[in-house]
Length: 38
Image 1 (cartoon, one colour):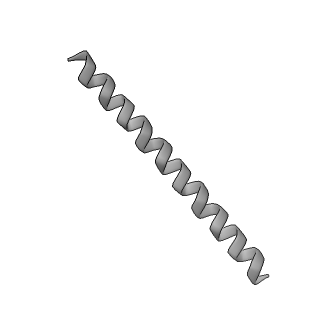
Image 2 (cartoon, one colour):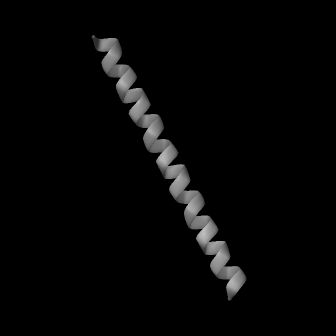
């Protein structure tokens, strides 16, 4: 039972990290697009 809980926490952490990485990449892309336009 405890193993399942720790696995869920592990996957949640991975999901959160992935989400943060995607957000960061999106911000960088938007930022560089704005720089190219201006």
